[in-house]
Amino acid sequence: MMRFVRRILIGKPLHNQEMSHEKLPKWKALAIFSSDALSSVAYGPEQIMLMLTLPGILAYGYLAPISIAILALLAIVTFSYVQVAKANPGGGGSYSVAITHLGELPALTAAAALFADYTLTVAVSVSAGTAAIMSAFPILAQHEVPIDLAILFGILMLVNLRGVRESSTAFVFPTYAFIFGIIALIATGIYQTITNHTPVIPPESLTKQMDWTVVVLILRAFANGCSSMTGVEAISNGVPMFRSPEVRNATLTTYWMSGILGLMFIGTSFLTMHFHILPLEDVTALSQIAELTFGRNWAYYYIQITTMLVLYLAANTSFNGLPPLLSILAKDGYMPRYLGVRGERLSFSNGIVLLSIIAGILIVIYHGNTEHLISLYAIGVFLSFTIAQVGMVVHWRKERSPGWIVRSTVNSVGALVTGIVVLIIAITKFFYGAWLVLVFIPVMIFIFKKIRSHYNDMAEQLHLPVEDFNPEEEANLKTGRNVVIVPISTPTGVVAQTLKYAKSISNDVIALHIATDEEVGKRVEVKWQGWNPGVELVTIYSPYRLVIQPLLDYISNLERQRNPEDYITILIPEFQTKKLWHRLLHNQTGWILRTLLILKENVIVTTIPFHLKK
Image (tube, rainbow, N blue to C red):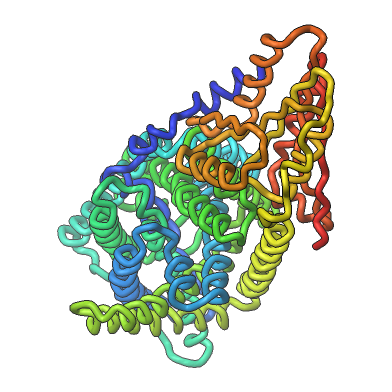
């Protein structure tokens, strides 16, 4: 029953050879990777306005200069991240740039910043989507957090677990519907300003004063508005997900995304000033603009519904950005190894589930309040921007290819500007929540290093020198009619220890390797032949990346072939971690296998423990 429900929700497993079909064309990739950046026009200009309309302060007139400054910053960051994508076609964005050119600490800082950015993106996007629909239907205001969690786990997580192709198909049309709606809103609003007799910008939208209090507010407003640029880096993190030629397609998509974002951001900022939009409780600024432009008709509800949808879908940028990054970190040993394994649908399903859980916790803690979540938001993004661009400067100076001086200059200017933005956000938002991110990043770096240390210690202890094992010493042992199966992943010290025990209880020993990748399987076979422990190695290829089921099928086939008096013994090599938290870094294949085999008759399941010392 559970398997049936799983197939209904997630879908049937995909073969490794179907990976090419999961690649995205540009028009789909634009929707998938840009939904976060494009949706920010629903709250970016509003966050600027909120800071400039505090009681007793005349600062509304600074909305235009701040918007123009953010537009210029967007152009700089866009050109810089195009260079990142070209230099790192394998994805990973700022982490990959930093680990190659700046070293471990900057790379882990970028990874921690991106981790904070992506999880906050999901929490902010889902909360903002609910806020948009509550503006049109205030009756839902009392159910904000349950709606957020239902959307997060019931739709976003499940659809992404079904794979990239299906999630892109499900999410692409709402994104384009939103783009069409916002461009139509801006065009209609501008047409009305030209044809009506009202001032294009009313005097009250141009009022401003200048003192130190206002300077602080301007900096905070600028920091809030910079949240509109989150998601610009997503394409550089996911270059391998594009169809060939990957880098060219990723570059063009980045330009398209930034062009559309810039147009929508400056357009909604203009209409905010034209209508002199002021804060209203439970009503977003975009909702006010749509109502003043279209009236309370179908067009207004079209804007609200598509805004709600694209804000929810903005979280999908994180679902396509963070799991691949976690997989790279896992392969480098800084995150649990199981985060680097693709699931049945060729997506990094473990990373998707982890992202959903953390975002859900943030929504519950902050009660779905978008303004409070945004206070934590932009610092991680711009920190990763800065690290990426510093790394690219080093890259161009090392490479010195034609045009490297221009490219290095672009990245140098970008690093300087985004570095200044990091300082502005850190200072102006420190007591409003930025301190949490500044604490979170060092904590994550510590966790990354502890995980890497554990894996290094484990590799050292499991290393198997060939000269330490002589299979002839264990020859000619008399055993009963007992077939012993030893599941292995690769020859290690714990496997050698298990095989010694296996040969002491039987002359009929089989080492069974389930290969989820043919290349890895061949490497294990070559390594096994070079070691030559005197035990047959049986390799079963699993193109659907399933490990447990092929192993169970092999045992079932063996059961059918044996005599009723014979026994089958499964010896599971398993190392025991010294610290309890280390267990979280390893899969539980042995435990699952024991649980599934315990009810089988004449099948003995034994764990051969190997105790790690560190």
